[in-house]
Length: 215
Image (cartoon, rainbow, N blue to C red; front, side, top):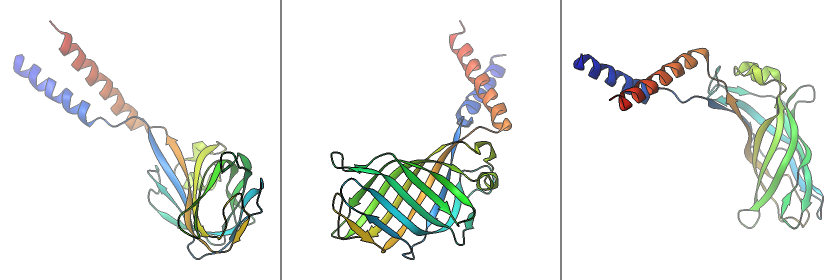
């Protein structure tokens, strides 16, 4: 009996060590074109940062239930955005405005900003970092196996580089827009099979607990 108990303990330990983490996250990313299309401008003072006609080259899902790491080319889609007003006390653009990935007929991503910031990386090289909230087109979500998130507001991040001579609160305008991306982090509910494994995980933890406290 002691030998069987020992083997059972080893199996329980193996299940505990190899049980999957419960709850995963998927990433859907729209990659921006590095062809220099579009423009970014700021009128100065407390106005908004505006981006227009910035090329979007593709969308890809990472860690998605379906079509994981499949890159889907996007033809004719552009990114346009208007942030909230610039706050000179914080040096950032506040909440509000809008962000949109569209070809004029279909909106793949639409929402508004939480905040945005323009950071200098050299004499004229600039970097836009921003957080936003948005919804994704149902077709995009379905393709990556995330149809349950249709109509749900998601958290997103924008990263974009460009050239300009000025910095907020000073005005500037640029058509030298380079590569970047905007992405959504999406929490994914475990598949039924994962829940069965989670049951095994709970059982193994219970078994280990009983063995630990058995007199």
